Length: 357
Image (cartoon, rainbow, N blue to C red; front, side):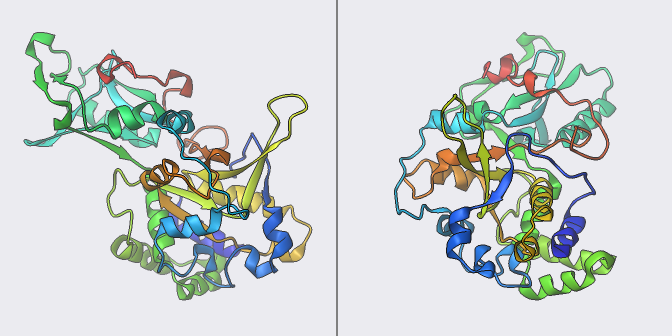
């Protein structure tokens, strides 16, 4: 388990153990009963935590590990089902007092609106804008990822929108085709770095970090970071490439929604690498079996856009039994770091310029 701690300390700031309030994790019983201890996690010792062999792309790797043992093919999710699956995930954007999105112009030919998974990153953007003009009446607004996924982030037929200076009258607005505004969604930089590290870590790197253990040196950490930044085959951009983390062998049992119904077994997927690692460590530390307790899981990472594309096709993976867990903001119960005045999830919905999504 020291290797998990080592990699987490390199990628993430120290956070308290995240607790899942809806279910308790466990190792898939089918896998345990039919596999040797090493095969339970699909890896050998040393570096296997990150899959080691990256010859396959992330989609093929996940498909191989999650497909139903029965060989059953599950129907594709509809757009409405995908929107519902993403609906409880909050994202944050800078808006005016009416909830109209703030469009930035990094150059004369580009107009960009940003959505952030991290309220701290969104607050930093808000503070930077206010520092240039403290009279701007701007705020942070929360939106449902499900509501903006197709209508804004992945909509090639955007309607006309009005752009104007904050506080200006509508008569001063310029009308643009919606396609002229680029919408970018930004992952937490810690999780983006974590994804890059997962895809560049070799068994040799893993052994080196395991040997270092609690005595991880700045030089070793810097070496791992530099490799991740320069050699990662995916997640090369700082926006629109959203990493999703999962441990194929981890399951949670969701309580029955109705009296007399059976509890549902679900596969958790995480935006936060630290939340997933902490949840796994907490579960494993409570195990009585010494062989199981000492095992290191194979962590998978894939792009959220690719995941949604998979869900829209018939698949041997039962995506209706997967649960996407939102990141825990720093400063929130179970989170860490400095607090910030972020909107609550209850405020998700947005303002008039975003089309009352």
